[in-house]
Image (cartoon, rainbow, N blue to C red; front, side):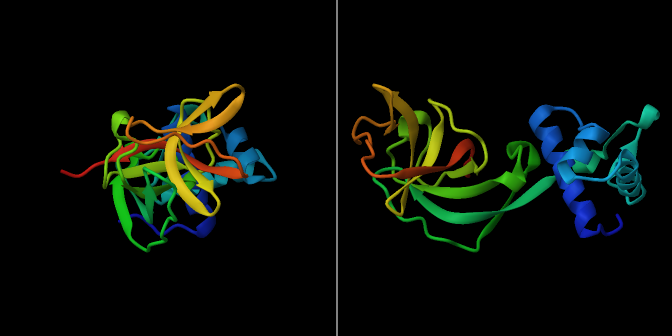
Length: 198
């Protein structure tokens, strides 16, 4: 059994996992120092050694390290925040339900949340009723991304598109209209994956 981590150790470990999933390699000691504002590289070294002693990292030659096998292939538990309408805008209902997914499906779990799809306006993009969307709240949205948007206090999922230099929300089902926001609106996250049960 692995030793329990302190809160700070847990944050460092989670950040290393997120980095590895997103970039395919491990952060340097300098990158860890910058991310957590450690005073010195030696402080980073001490954290890495402690995580290794507690069974979460393997130390390699030349100060290298990697996650132990079960951490590399582990699961992640995330909150399912409710439902989002794939149709017209609809208020997302907060919920306390959680789901456990394979970590490889959620590259950045600390920056992501889950939403259940209601409606079929995105069916041509492969997003259907009752699918679970993985949404990254910090990823910068690009034209063509599928996004969760907030309009007048209500949420919807659509593809971000541009027409005449103005952004709008494109439905992926010809039976549903596109949304051309007139008032202020906000993108709450970019859809990075789907989880579907059969």
